[in-house]
Image (cartoon, rainbow, N blue to C red; front, side, top):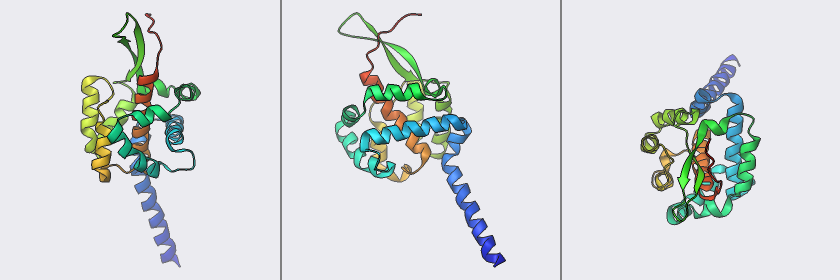
Length: 200
């Protein structure tokens, strides 16, 4: 009986360690309340794209081929930008400013400057991506491009890599889910934000 109990405890311990390794990048870079906000952000993305009845992995499995073929069209058609802004406002932390900053974008057809969200190079999210790229070398190029350009990768590299090398992207991993949700919500925001830039 003691031997069975001890085997059960070892199994539970091993399972806990393996689960922790999948989310250690989150735990190492964000505090608990920020992680809760990230989970809400991930759930929002999943609900907008597939409804609340679907799980993240089957949702992405069905979505990725469309994103590879048609770019971000499915994202733009399904994610409600007003609800996305309401999500930002509901964060219990300053998570938004740990992921995004703002940049000034000039309207080429007029003489107007607009506000656009940009990659926060010195935020906690950048540190999280750096740590995630150490575990998943597929993401190293993604991270390097963002650090070099100071902006989000918008050429479809992420969805192409998920499609061609799915073994490198565990869609049940909370850290990968956060990466995907943040990436695609960023694309939606950058396309739909129509806020005038105000100096000062």
